[in-house]
Length: 190
Image (cartoon, rainbow, N blue to C red; front, top):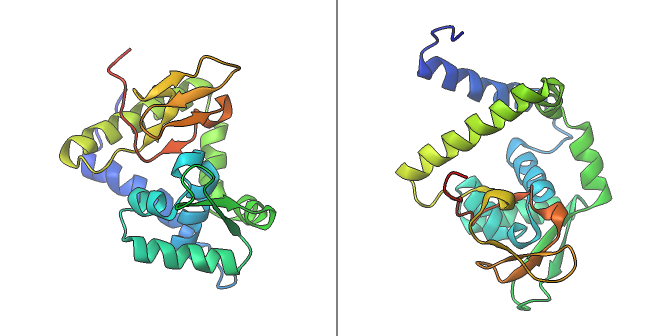
């Protein structure tokens, strides 16, 4: 049964959940923006693991995104690799050291708390967050974040267990389907 909280209160509580994790950072750890970038590169699909992808995801400039990535690379938390597809773009990969920093980060407490919810509550939360993203996309067509498993660009490539993104013209593996994509086109209600 709903408690009757006003939407503004629920929104404020959601923002508070994020800030709580950020407030536990010490100065020798990554900054909140660096954490967002590092986490993004860990959960984004391969086609979205670029400076441009992070800039779009975080609604920031490519210049700011590039500076953040450069700091993470200097600290050994990510590595850059020139794309084999087009030779121009650079793919960002979280290093072993970066993965360790993510595991040890105080903000992981929110992820753990979500993981401790009963499966039905996790599914409800996923539906709610997806619904909120869809609602916000109506107001801001630039916001097209989602996962491949519910994207209209996803198709089978006809061989092996691989899938194909028609928009990015790239092969995806099954493990990529639940990762973040910054060029998501939601499938109409299934």
